Structures are given as structure tokens and as C-alpha cells.
Image 1 (tube, rainbow, N blue to C red):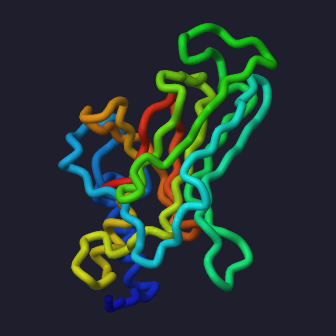
Image 2: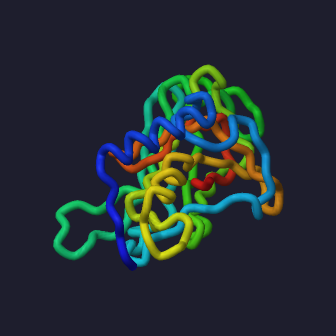
Length: 211
């Protein structure tokens, strides 16, 4: 694969163009929040050919009302590296949990066992259990999905160019309530320095980065 790197001036021009295309909302291009589309309309993030395998595809933990909890899914350590690379980070703060998945109110100190897993390694889809768990709307959970180990040739033409950079800035986190149902857009922020997309999460379902 050939790579054509962009200079600062070109990147600034792309950023300005992307901001203008949607009024500057959500940090880039693409549809606005609450958009719903069929799965065939989305291009999902894919692992790069050189991406390491996941250290584990599933992590479970106890989230306790009144306490802050943060968990991560990591890639395996690459040869020559000291630290492994993060793929997903998920955070619940002390006021996020209000009820269990059945809707029963939780008191301070009550807990819910949460499982976070990579359910599709080719499209990097993440699934959370228990399904139906809903968070405090005024203090939702926060989800970060990293794209540092993803294939940056987003348009799959064999060359990383300005076109791919534009698409990169349009990456968003989407959610799907059930298999075969449409995907809904979450208000997302793209950070090209940290190489991640982040969004608030109001409840549990399936999540993925796509454009």
C-alpha cells in the first residue's frame, strides 16, 4: 500500500471545509444526531492489516451506584512495545446508575454486573450487557473508541490521501438496539490527536464507529 502524507496547510483546509459542511456541529461532516439509517448505508471502521489481535474480546465488571468505574478493552502487546494499545474505554461516574436492567431503582451501594465485548472483529462492533440497562439522562456513561489500529484507507483505494482524511473527520459512533434493526447516530466528537471517537451513552445496546 502506498501512502501520501498531508502537510499542515492541506489538513487545515480539510478541517475548514468539513466544519462548513455541517455548520461546524459534531466536529466534522455527516448527518446530525438522531439520524437513523440501514446497515448497508454505513461504512464501518475496519482493523488495519497490521493491527494486533485483542488481548481479550470480553471484560466483565461490577458497576456500583455512587462510585466511578472505568474499564478498557486492549489489543495484545506488539513486539518491541512497552504498553499495549487501547481499543475501547468506558466510564460510569457516581451518578450514572439509577436502575437495573428491569427498571428497578438502585440505592447507593447497589451494583450491576456489566459485560463489554467485541462481537464483530471485522467491523469492530462492541456489545454491552445487560441489554436494556438505562442510565441517568443528566449524567450518562461515556464511551471512547480508538481508531489508531484501524485501517486509515477508509475509501479502500489503496492510497491514504486527503479523501481519507475527510472521511476520518466524519467518523461517528452509531448504536443498534437489536440485530437487523437500523443504526442510530450518537452525537460524537473526533479527536485526531488521540485517534478516538467519543460519545455519551444513555443505555446499553451495540455500538460501532462508522461514516
